[in-house]
Image 1 (cartoon, protein in one colour):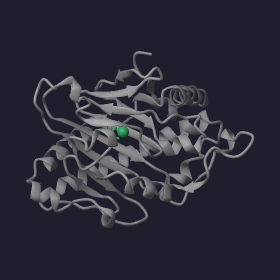
Image 2 (cartoon, rainbow, N blue to C red):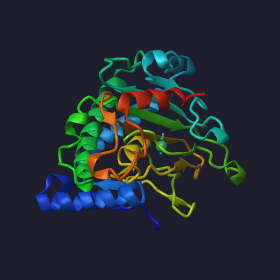
Image 3 (cartoon, rainbow, N blue to C red):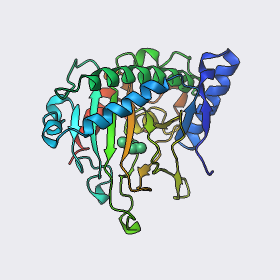
Length: 302
Ligand SMILES: O=C(O)CCC(=O)C(=O)O
Ligand SMILES: [Fe+2]
């Protein structure tokens, strides 16, 4: 395998035959790779461009303005985390990136918006809605791939505690000492249900292959990179894979990316799906989506 599969997902709104064929491709990618690229997703290119533009505007704010909206337990981990504030790979220390998270959900408006940047809220809120809708569409594909009713996940994803994150990897010295790689985001697997990632043109995302080698996942205009998180791996009793990935520095300039971490409603019980059950004790004990996320989030920051 020298590239993750690319899937045209407009077919999920097609005929029954088209929907099943698309779901089969999604299912194969989730079982074998845990990553796939999507095209034909219907998200407006202009909205994506605006999201990157407001992200750049946010990170260009003075450090005090960003620190004023810092994330923490009190804001339900919505807000800003500084350079080296997030630890994806404890062995490598804090990542050389800063980020800003928003989420909507049962807990109401806990988001921390900086003063004087109204378009950050309007654009990221619109982008959040568009990507959440895409996540629901892809979930119809998951359901068919898992031999569940097509709308199985719909009611479980209507009040999601999804997190939209904008990331900035500041420019660094070049060339980078290879001994220092990965100089971006340490190797990790995501802990949620589904991640939908937009990256700028810089590159550097890599996915771990089963043979342990790193596969480049370069940016391709108009596509998103999707991957399965550990909650979904758990839900499917590891039928779907949560695959480790990282970001390395491949060019000296700044890099921006926008992952969307989609999660089920907080009260959804994550217990082995009926079509993934096997003889004997379940692989993982049941836990609600909300409890699972609380547990994982609390351990993620330096
Ligand atoms: O910045 C990226 O392209 C990926 C970041 C990532 O994997 C994450 O935040 O979980
Ligand atoms: Fe990730």
